[in-house]
Length: 184
Image 1 (cartoon, rainbow, N blue to C red):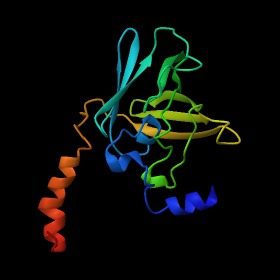
Image 2: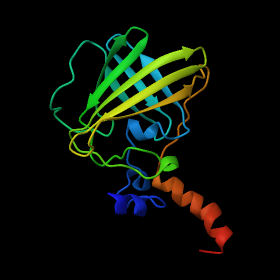
Image 3: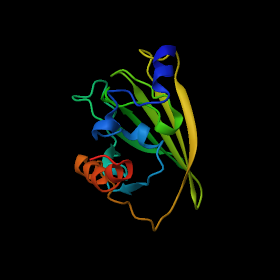
Image 4: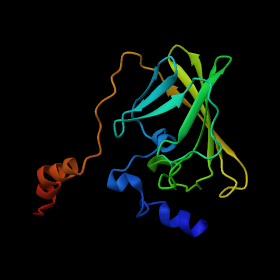
């Protein structure tokens, strides 16, 4: 794994979903400085991510996390509920094409289709939310690992339409990159 990590430190892997506009998955989305929003309904919570303008569904209707979800998803299969003042989300069924980590914390890490994730969200005060994420994947890692971070809350902020669209990259290159480098 050391050789893979060293090669991965300075450049994205060739199969990085980010380079081809595939969804990042919720775990990797936390590593970016883009907004996210929780929207609660009677039977589920939606978590909207600014990057890629995507969302995931967290079922809160009392269902259990299936042992073997019917299909793997970029954002996993998710169930959630309250443990006192902490919103707890359990998930599995992650598509193996997404990575754990972020560009800011290279390297990126793989996972197996058996990975399970526990997320715990607790409001620390009016302006801050603590997020604790635990990765459980005995097929790839020798023990579970946990990371904790603080997310700023901005109740009146809007989630921007930040899409990864190949035509946007082409437009950027045509208008800025090529003229700046003298390329055509």
